[in-house]
Image 1 (tube, rainbow, N blue to C red):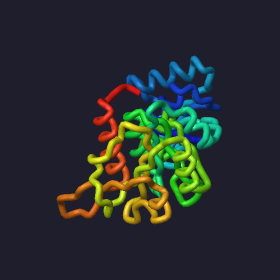
Image 2: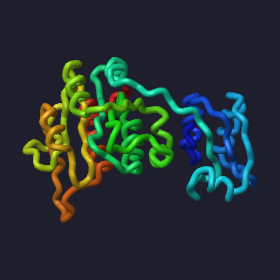
Image 3: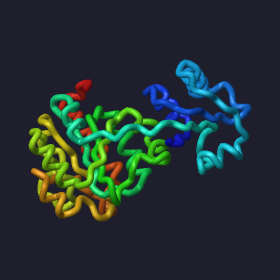
Length: 244
């Protein structure tokens, strides 16, 4: 079971018709449109609702930032990379995360990815953040709608994408090409690395091209979530913000 907390994550899980064992809502909370919809959708899906004290809900969610609701949801079946590639629209827009370990960053990236119509996110199985409740909360529920594949090896995943005709574009602060000089109107997989380390050298060698975001201030780099947002919206700009 996955324990999701927060009004947006729980609501989006219900909107996605994700099976749940039960919901727990803090007692005495009324008048919020999202909680009203949560109750209505749970009723339509025959999901039991319990009321609870705020202290007990703190224990269930392991945080005070649950916004008065938590749910016991069934874990989603793992998605294979091959299925992710096959389901991608034309031209494909994929996001590959290389070594990002902060759930908050993963959540922020997933939120932007969903807003930009990304076909799927690829993460490594080890030494990388997964879709934890904290990541789901940071994504405002976007993790319920963006397909995510977990792979054993990122470089092998990039090779699989290349075989499918997807160009692999890595974000690298040392790249000579500026991020807005590349043509993103073809099938693309954007590769974003962790803060500090960036895209790892081995991963970089499996990219077709690397691009850099110019920094004109005193800080050396953007965080991974902000950098991914810059790249994704450049892709949308070049594609005319067409609905995917």
